[in-house]
Every structure is written in structure tokens, then in C-alpha cells.
Length: 148
Image (cartoon, rainbow, N blue to C red; front, side):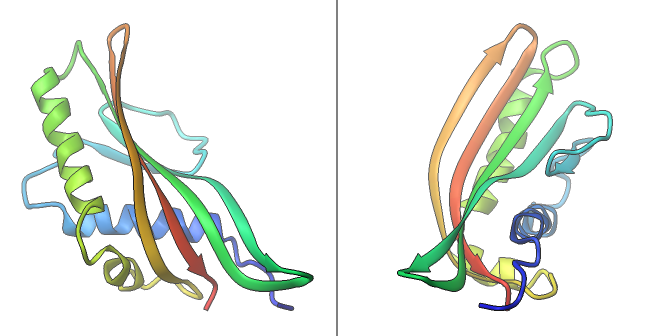
């Protein structure tokens, strides 16, 4: 492959954040801010974060195929002083429902991300934590994608 990787991690974050925004049911995630990547912005709550934590190029022998395995983490974060746990759980469920759809790949590819093609999405794990007054629900998955 002679072309650069075209920032596959940023494109993956854009695509995942895009499907959460476009596929959430009307009236859900109200007041929740989306952050992508390692944002330099002040991180308000409630928020969800989409981070491509790792990307590994597919290599066969000495051939770089252009395909990537991208580890995606999506976290819903709320403050217990501002949101009831039930509100946090409803917001997290909305995100999880989007990421568990059987058409995630076609939805990712419909996001008009230039030079990006997803070909497999595999949800891996989900966790819930409470740290002081912070609720955090995270779902991790593996995205197989390539610059197209």
C-alpha cells in the first residue's frame, strides 16, 4: 500500500459518533454532549466519548494490505449530582442499542466519511463503574475498516 493511512482512527471515531447521533431515537440523549478522540475541549457532563484507542494495520508477510483493526471505546459519563442513575442508564442504553444493531456496518458506511469503508463491527464488552459521584458506562468494540 503506497497511500497513507488517512487517519483511520479519526475517521472511525467520526463514523461511530455519526451513527449514534443519526440513529438515536428522537428525544433521547437530550443535553448529552458528544466528544471524539482525545479532545482538548472542556469535558462537560453528561457526555459520551468516542475514542479509537488503538489501530493495528493488517500485514501479511511484508505486505501491508490497507485494512485496519480499530479498537473503539464509547463511554457514557454522567454526574450523580446532576443526573439520576436511571437517566444515565437510559442514555447508555440508547448508545448500546445503536452499537448492537445488525446493520452497524452499512450505517457506518452511510456517514459520508471520505476515504473510509467499514467491513465488520464486533461489540466486545461493556462495563459500568461508579467513581465518587461519576457514573460511567463503556462499551468496547472492534471495527475492521480501510481507507477506500
